[in-house]
Image (cartoon, rainbow, N blue to C red; front, top):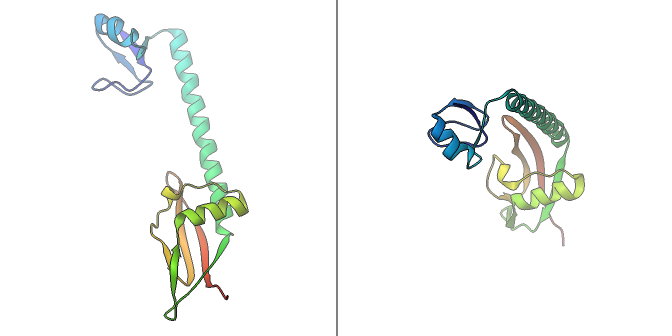
Length: 150
């Protein structure tokens, strides 16, 4: 019996694949547990629509990532911190602070776990941080840390 998998099934196949299994396995396990549906004209039509929707969603996500990448290229975030005599900052600027500043000032939401360059920014100067916005699309943002005058 041919079925279309609704979920990944270990040692059988991935979601949305058409596989051939024995009638008993299909009826008593896969269909009963809603892991698959029998192949029919309607189920194939639904599968094709789902694949098209997924493709469109992926294209939209790529376009959005490219727009954010272009916005990030124009932004320089400014931070001020107390600095010792050797130019080293007391404390550091974390990626969480960079994420919050982007959201507050520019409305750009990025996840701090998506930063390619991990680590805290702990000296005065300019930094270029890279952020993976989508698979293969990496945006770059400039961060400037200066000395706070009290």
